[in-house]
Length: 190
Picture 1 (spheres, rainbow, N blue to C red):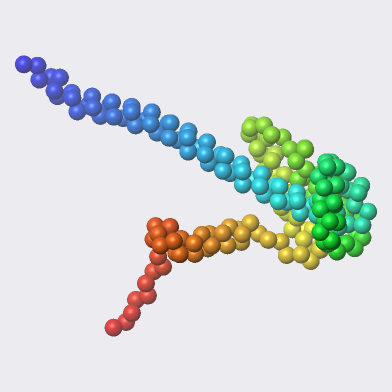
Picture 2: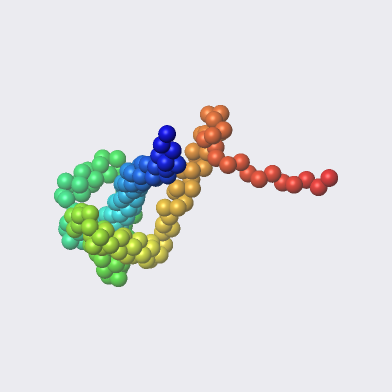
């Protein structure tokens, strides 16, 4: 009887299990990384789009803003359709006072958030440039908001409101799993 093969049986199963685990881990890691990349990319582009929208509205409120919007390379169809929609509804935001400093900040801001000038490649350099532009645009938006006396809605505030709304919805649906962790109980002194 050959017992030497039985002595190595545990090592063989361990090596086989280890190799299968490594292969499964690589696949799962790649899939998780891909999903994470798409989520983070979407969040960044959504934030840049939100900032771009604010910039267009600020530019439209400036007196004589036609040249500023053309410098930002805004497509005519978008600006015309928004003007027609606002005129149709009878809505009008108040004009901003003429301010050369504000116009300069706004022109810089619009050049940072202009979607036509964004590099859409998936390289480290392009991602770093996008992140830098988003960071500068966020800072410039805060400067403009302070100049205008507006209070900027922070993204974290919106997220916390959405999460609290989700918790309320989960509480009314009756699913305890959807509510999240329960608050700690207060210790009562006996």
